[in-house]
Length: 156
Image (cartoon, rainbow, N blue to C red; front, side, top):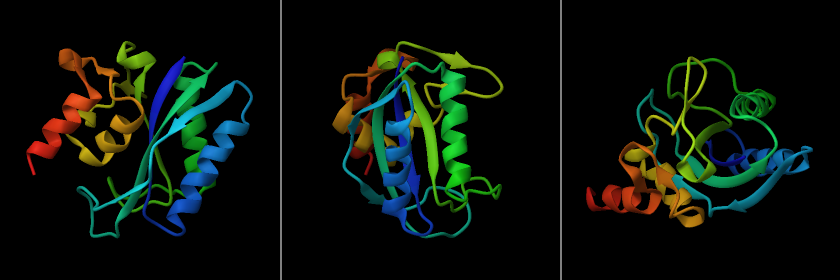
């Protein structure tokens, strides 16, 4: 399976949290980090008042199924010190499964929704993702990551 994931951090050493998560993924058997976007600093969207985020995207090749990948990402978040808190609140590490298999694979259940349900309107996710996977499809409407990113930029 190939997966596009989003990475974000706005607590502590933001860059180190993201770099450590990528290193941990790369060291896991059956997981390979194929590409990583540039880190960008963004203002938080929603939630309580909080500091800016560093955001990135990565492409993974892995032998895990979607739920197995989600479990790994959640374990990395907890390992970085993420605790339950307010929705969209500050966090040392935020990892999301964005798209699977070029955007062709859809998962919708109580634990996971792919494509990520808020992907198409979030510039802080689309910009890094467009850098490494511009032609991946976001199955809702069949538009590409690059097209959705251009639409977000046009709305500014």
